[in-house]
Structure formats: C-alpha cells, structure tokens
Image (cartoon, rainbow, N blue to C red; front, side, top):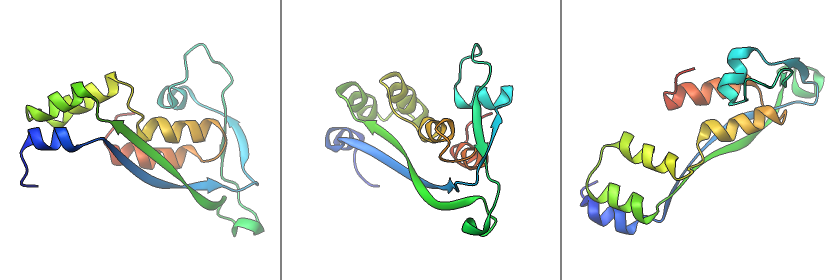
Length: 136
C-alpha cells in the first residue's frame, strides 16, 4: 500500500472481515454430526450426539433448503503487542498467530457457532473454511 509498517501498526485499531452464508429454511432436517465434522466444528471428542442441520427443501424456499443469508465475521483487535509485530514488518502468518493467541475471532469460529445453533449448514461452513485456506 506504500506505507511504512510502523505507521500501519500505530494507525490500526482493528480489522474486520465478513462473509455471507445462506440461512437454513425452517424445513431443515436434523442429523448427527460425523466425527470429522465435530472436529471441524471444534466440538470436544467427549461430545457424542452433536445435532446439526442440513437443507431439505420446500415450497417456501423453492426447494433449495435455504432462505436468506446471515453474516459471519472475523475480528482482530490491534493490541499494543500486535502493533509491535506489525511495525517490525512480520509476515502475515506471524501476525495471525499473535492475533489468535490474543483471542481473535475467526470466520471459521463464527460460522461454526451458526452451524451448531442450526442457522446454517456444514456445506456453507466448508465454503468459508476452504476460502480461508484452512485444512479439514
């Protein structure tokens, strides 16, 4: 962007990213999450019966299983320690590692909450995870 890293570090207060995911229609169907899905959702191994929902389709949603959209967000507050990491022109993965250690809310965590609350589906979560480059 043509600015010095120390200037960016001092000027930033926070960074927000957002994506839209499709909201499940009321015709959604419950099912138990598979082990790999529970892992992706961040559910502890000790949880046995984790219910998630998948699209079904009805006249209300034109047989798509979805009706409307909802936002998922990633928020990184730029703390003093993050300002220092940015100011020394650290690579993006180091900045991300520091932000995660300080409690940054990620897109993956945001969409996982919506899946666990029955608002969206695993297929919508996969789109977010693949886009972010996460492994699952």
